[in-house]
Length: 92
View 1 (spheres, rainbow, N blue to C red):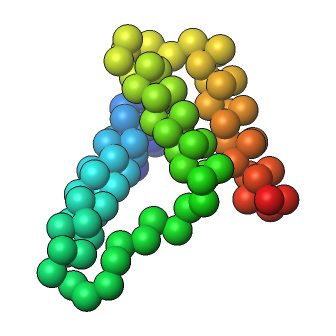
View 2 (tube, rainbow, N blue to C red):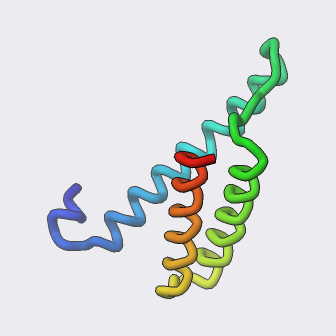
């Protein structure tokens, strides 16, 4: 909060994204590991179309993060993936 109040947007975004990635990165493997001992199967809840979009998003995210800089074109690709996910979620 202090970084955002001091107009240090990049620092505050890095903190927020880092926290989100840590939460996601620890929660999903923990649930997957717990599903070994729990009865029933682990269901992700995504159809084949959404799994393809998830894979495309992961690949696009890796290609955006690895070089260390994001371009407007990469941002546009992310927005197009988001728009297609929302469209297909609303209108399958």
